[in-house]
Length: 112
Image 1 (spheres, rainbow, N blue to C red):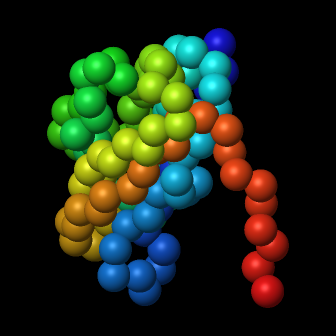
Image 2 (tube, rainbow, N blue to C red):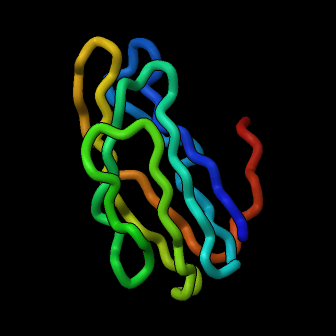
């Protein structure tokens, strides 16, 4: 079983949290586990909005520091949006809308 690790972070001075990698590439294997962890700059986070046809469970519940879901990965090269709400160490809370990409990861394009 493939496990993909992601991190919910809130870089110092940034106005919003981030998820790395973005998008999360689940690959082509069925039943990929995606696991998010809070960075040291995030008190806790929640995830919601994952579709029940593709993910189980579909939400984390409130105020977690780690969450895992299984991506059935049965939809080919589909992109999925979900919602992350994170709270930083100062108590600020913001919501972002990152992506999960199923299928083959596109080739890496180096920054110029």
